[in-house]
Image (cartoon, rainbow, N blue to C red; front, top):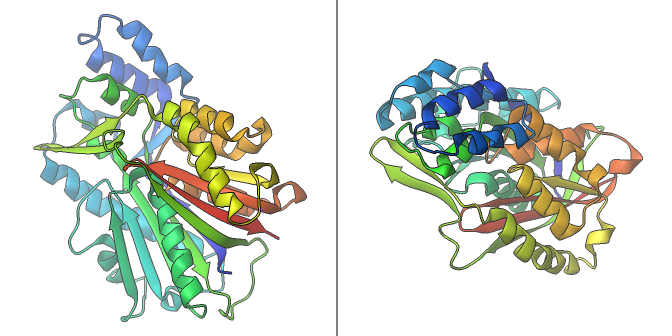
Length: 357
């Protein structure tokens, strides 16, 4: 089976503490809500310490056009993706010339040519001229997991080849000062920027095995009907406006367990047979819903909670940050069967069954 051999991550330079974000949101929303003092307390309960943005805090003091936001997106998408790729390659004996297929995942900006074409033209990334490219847009928080699934399928079909999955989001550019909804207030407390790059190799790739590897056993995609309004974007004249339903934790509690039970049954496994969980930390309530639905012991959520605390919700790359932390751990408690899981617009789920030997 294909192997995940390395994960590289990158975040932008502007570090914003949750207290700074709270003060900003209070100033912006205080005249909209009479109960602002109650609502603003959401920042204190996110279990997020800080986030990383591509722009400084004062950038949010004025309105910006979609064109300006998208220009910032392209510039930073290239820079962050390149850093994540180099960090992933540095942990291996591979070079960029060894990559056969780039799968680029993002939902927070628009670019044609796609960002992977810009990366091909970066002078210090020497990709093969005949490299295959699969840009994927619109999967939101599920994107990192879906990218892994497509990389798994490719390297399973072509066991001598290597896939590079990149997930990149510049989520704060979607913030709109004129949107004084509760959904936007919640989003202001959660989202940050980041990029992750994952190297997946087929079984017949003759490269030095890594100390820590994860085998991908299978993947499982699900989309539920009549749930288009749960999560996503509304496209406005001045950019992307967040759709973020308060029903997400309830949907997880009601829908997730039978979905994962069905997936594991295909491999003669039960939830109790899982040794580790790599979950997209969409927020505290989302993590709690995962725990309740799948009956996960608290100690097995340590990595998920730590990534949320350090980075917030970066959408698609966040679960890959969790993947990196898990891959870096080498002890008996983190060996065996595990699941990687993320949820996104559609409303949809992407799960991968992994094995750490």
